[in-house]
Each structure stands twice: as structure tokens, then as C-alpha cells.
Image (cartoon, rainbow, N blue to C red):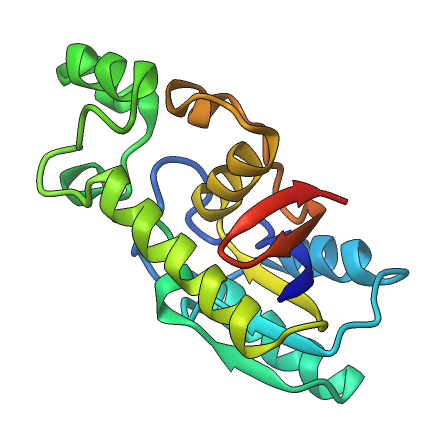
Length: 190
């Protein structure tokens, strides 16, 4: 069982910067334009799958209607929950939690932000969703509209990077990446 998986990160949001996590902020006009430009010449897709958070879901809904493509919202593909760090920037955290931030940057699997979701649990949630998509939509071309953390995880897996390098994976707003996925969740860059 295989799928061709295109990954699209949401564009710039109203509360740009910092750890967004589960904060459900909307796209700005610039964010909408970024995402529209990213997919203008891309596709076609047999299915669009989106995080339910509005910074992904609103664009996914519009794109699915425009392209007459089935749309599925997948809660397990939402961003990592950063707990007490949600809405804060790295610069702000440097002022009062510099050591903790350093531990997180050095190995996000080994340090969890206060009241946050452990990265290992996040990885299991995301990879489980990708495995279900691969099983349920064998042979399909799927566009996944999601978040920086989800995309970093999937790209790091595809590149065979050690877990400590997760946060070194660059994922710009509205960037589009392509993977091939083979069950059970073997990812390679297309």
C-alpha cells in the first residue's frame, strides 16, 4: 500500500511567531496568498486531508471546493501542543526559561515543555494517522495541509535523520514538499 503525499504548511497567521501549537489563530491575507501561490501549479490530488485548526482547515475547505476534491479533517495531524509555551516566542522564553528551551532545541524527544505534549506521543499520533491514510487510500495522490511540526517530523523520517535533528528541518510558511509513503509508514522524498 502506497500513497503520494504532498505536504503544505499553512501560511502566515494573525498571531505570527512563537510556538502556535493548539492556538487556533486564522490566516492573514498574506497567508492565504502564500498558500494559493504554493498550490497554483501543483496537483492534481485525489484527496485533501487537513488539520482541523482553522489556519489549515479554512484554506483546505476552499481548495477542496474549488478543485472538487474530497476533503478529510484529521485531528491527529494537528500541531504539537506546547503547553505553557503556547503563544510565546523563543526570545521571550530565553528571558525566563533559557535552560529548558536549550534542552528542547537540543533534543525535543528528551524534554517536554511544561504541561506540553511529549514529542514521542506527538510522533506516534502523527505517524499513526499517516499509516491509516496509506492503508485507507492506497494508490492515491493526497495533499496534507498541516503544521511546521508535523512536516518536520515527516521530512525528518523520510531523510532518516536522528531524532535530535528534528528541529533542524526547515519548513517555511506555505512550503510544499512531496513524499512517497509505503505502509507501514515508510517515507521517502519524491
